[in-house]
Structures are given as C-alpha cells and as structure tokens.
Length: 215
Image 1 (cartoon, helix red, strand yellow):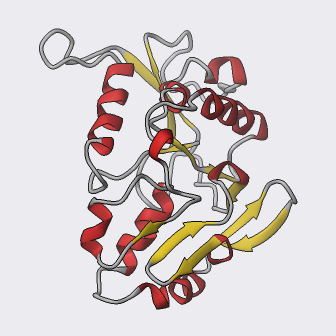
Image 2 (spheres, one colour; image 1 turned 90 degrees about the horizontal axis):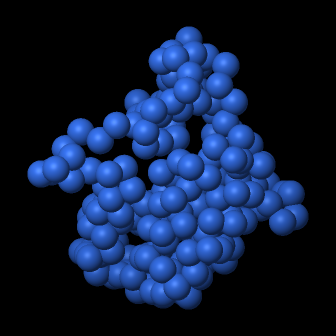
C-alpha cells in the first residue's frame, strides 16, 4: 500500500524516510536494537522475491503461521505502513491486490500528512528537470515508481525524448480509480523537454499486478 523514495534519491529526504520507519518500529541501536513486532504477509511468493506485508510493533494475538487472519481498517491503522503514510514519508502505491477499504484508509492517512515529510516539496505533479542519471540524486521527491523508471531508463546516457516510448514498450498497466478505466503508465506521464511529471496523483492510480501463489 505504500512506497518510500529510494536510497539513491535526494538527501536528507531519503534518509529521513528511513529514520521515520526505524522510529516507528522502536529501533534504537543502543537501547533497543531488536524491537518486538510482527508482520502480516498477504502473499508467500512474489516475482520480486520480496515479502509483501504489513508490519506492526508489539505482539500479535494470533499464533505464528495462522493462515486465516483478515486485515481490516481498524488493524491497518495500527500498522507501521499506515503510520509511515501519516508521517508524510510514504507515497501511495496501490495494486489491484489491495482491498478497496484498505486503500481508502491509506488515502485518509496521506491527507493527514499534508505539510509533513515529503509533501511540502513533492514535485510529482509539478515536475522535475532531469538531464542525466546524476540528476536523480538531486531532484525534489516524486512518486517512487516514476523515479525508478527514470533510473532504469537513464542507465544509458540519453535524453528524455525517448522516455515515453520506453514506458510504452514496458506496457505497465494501471487503472484510474476516479473513472474506472485502464491505461498504460505512459499515459499518465508528461514529458516536456527535460521536464517530467505525472498527470494523475498517485492516490488515483491502481497498478495492475499478479497475486503471488499461496502455500
């Protein structure tokens, strides 16, 4: 449900985001290097080989490995995911595998984060100027998925002129939630010279993905 800017993005925002998460889980290298917590994992397999999960501090009432835990909005609000969004150090990243009720809660948390974290300097809608890969470490925060696609594209020295074609070839599918229609990611990206931006805000985008297999 959330996405934070990459470690290669502009500092101090990227390190501030990491520190916010560590604070939320109660990590302190001196006094509490192993804070107690648990995760709820929706999928057991993912093509990225990373766990897709919700993190919580404290102890779970269920036994480890219980396979019929239902995550509702009330429990979501106790998660580190939700609190990171509230703190302004997470962007929405909604997949079609995320329940609408949970998506709605995340969007509420994002609205509460106005003026915090990334949001005072966010340039997702206004755009950033990118002439080379080196610029990605300097630009204001943008939706991390867009930043990653720019990073991938600029691994070869080239202008932004071909960025939309690059996205078209990848053909990542999305839904626009306000109108309920499918698009390609390239359809919500605007390139003008060396400037790139999203034409839709992240909370209105649902990325189409495949659910992992459950064991």
